[in-house]
Amino acid sequence: MSTHARAARTARTPVQQAALVVGAVFLLVGVLGFIPGITTNYDTMEFAAHHSEAQLLGIFQVSVLHNLVHLAFGVAGLALARTAAQARLYLLAGGAIYLVLWLYGLIIDHDSAANFVPLNTADNWLHLVLGLGMIALGALLTRRPSPTRTVG
Image (cartoon, rainbow, N blue to C red):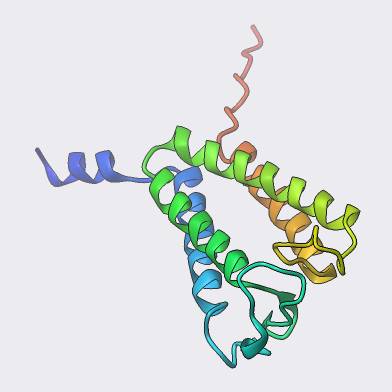
């Protein structure tokens, strides 16, 4: 097999590249959530509760569970980037999950036991942007070009 044929076979589509990047960012965020200093109030971090006052970059409320979810989304992104169809599914389904999480964060009382992830206002708006962004990537990077018509 020629070098060109091997490169063509292993070339990633734009949607696969997007899933890889999104997955890598989620992995990075998940790891950073466990690093004191990058995560402020690290000593208050709980497994899963609204009482956790730990904040990634001093902005986004996190807990052990929240960080583990980010790590899981990261691993899923890297694993599902193997094919274009799986990468598209990851971006579309992941985006939908983040939109549901955004709605959940808007509906619940942030000081109640229902806020088990935990979420704050900054998390909510980030989840909206993530949800819309992932869905846009999954849809736009797999859109088929419309056939050109010939006049004649």
